[in-house]
Amino acid sequence: MARRSIRGYVNRPIERDKILQLLDIARFAPHGGNRQVLRWLVINDPAKVSKIAALTIDWMKHTKDTNPGLYEEAKMEVFIKNWEAGSDQISRGAPCIIQAWANKDERTAPPAAAIAIAHIQLAATTLGLGTSWTEGIGYASRAYPPLLKVLGMPEGQIPYATFLIGYPTEFYHRIPTRKAVDVTWV
Image: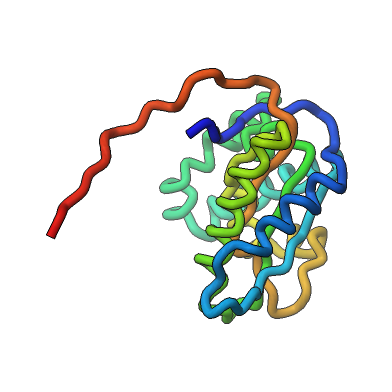
């Protein structure tokens, strides 16, 4: 109940042993048929994270011309305007990005990535770390060749999930409000 999406991070790289501990926890998350198809990309350098955020903004600008429907639906203009005003709402100052990769045709990868990252997000809190999904970077990583080149993605692999991780700038002391459970018993 205490896990929150963190949108502000201290500019401090995460200790490698903590990242490895979290990825080891993800290794034990359920996978379809226990196939264990995920590979992990870790960018634990604030300067590199900032470059990835900038390339994501470039992709958004490119998307305005190539896919105006997605540009409008995802409200990319808001992210671009904020970026140009000096507010990074892409990486939100996180010093680290982690992506779950798998073969582009791997049918079990989408749920495996989501489940593994959910395990990481829960465990990260116990290490004093905060996380947040970032599909902006995720979409750009699958579609924008300049970003693909920076990430060094192997041929035939794609990222199925991307999240930010770092030390939070704020700590929350109350449980987030949620609607009551909506259940139908049959």
